[in-house]
Length: 75
Image (cartoon, rainbow, N blue to C red; front, side, top):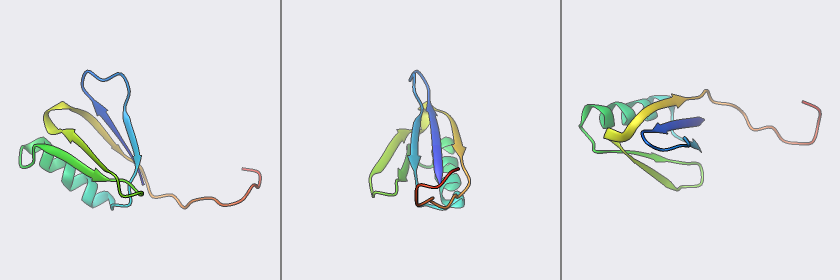
């Protein structure tokens, strides 16, 4: 699923494809915003970890799960 994170005082948003469920991402964001965790920590599909300070999060957009398209057909 696609996750977009807006960071305060940063001109671009962070966009990643995560293998985590929407509930896992939402819980991690809630923990970071409430102060339970100082960092928002998410894993992308390639196993890389993305860390964002909880006090710098402007917004988080959680996309829906989409199946990957394979082939060269017309869209």
